[in-house]
Length: 236
Image (cartoon, rainbow, N blue to C red; front, side):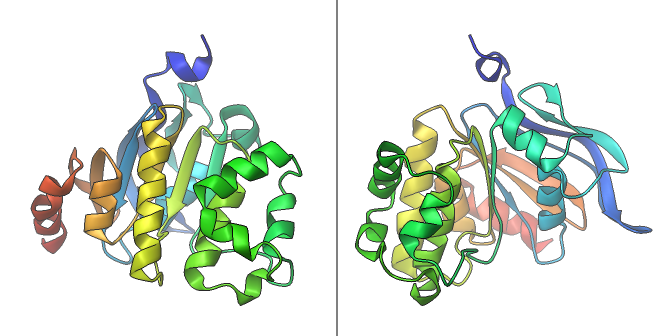
């Protein structure tokens, strides 16, 4: 049995304090994403959500605390090592792509394996008819699907998504929600989703944490029934 299967948690932040210069943004934060599960991290702008993701990925060092991926302490590992050793995939804000390259070329930067490309296009069928179009000419929703698809081609075990619905039209939001749900239902992918769209986040995940002023102020089980609780926690 693999190490990924033996660990009950895909990602753990344990007592993490981190920030920039002398300014601390996260204060003794602990958060767990279960192996094969999905957790939503929510909070207002400036709460520290993106800082937390940068810490998890390894783009920002912690001042105290530790980061575990599948039970392994990766606190001091660089992002590339976390990707290689623990199958970490990260889709940052901004629908990132190479705008002068076609959709196909963007995907083939990761792999030219036909089977892998076909699988990811089955996940995002809207991209199939856009393979020859320059990525810079795609809509925001199409670029977001491309960004997620490109990351999925790396075969991550732990996927981190930062605000995937930002600036996206509602019909594409629904498609991305369906993708997240279907991926986590397979049981071989864990997801940490940072999102301000409360309904989308809770429908897509099995648990949530609310981050305010760099501290976790509420946690619970996901699902539509938790919407009122989360909105109340975020209103405090």
